[in-house]
Image (cartoon, rainbow, N blue to C red; front, side, top):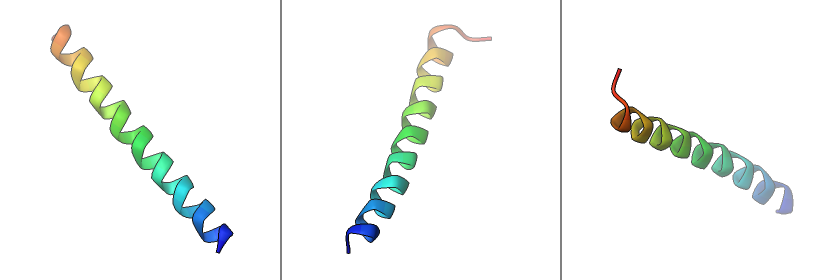
Length: 34
């Protein structure tokens, strides 16, 4: 049961990081357009 939780937490962390990265990119893109 604990292993499953660890796996879920790991994938969730990856998703959060990905979303955060995309969000940061869009914000910096808005601030300084190419």
